[in-house]
Amino acid sequence: MTYVITDACTKDEACVAVCPVDCIQSNDQSAMMFINPDECIDCGACASECEYSALFAEGDVPADKKQFAQVNAAFFQN
Image (cartoon, rainbow, N blue to C red; front, side, top):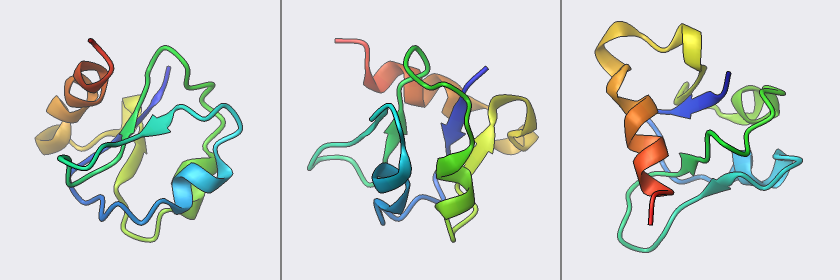
């Protein structure tokens, strides 16, 4: 299981500061942060820091935001 960042992300980066495995990244072209599903250890530290309700455990992502699991994974496929 992994955590997923959705489009509510404001690129605040508070989640990055608390991630113990540094699996959250972005770039200058993106409007949001992304979680690498292969590196996420499912600790939930990022979700508790996000004040924008942009982070969900993969099984708890709202139905209208499910596509963001794929969006996060795709960011790391290069």
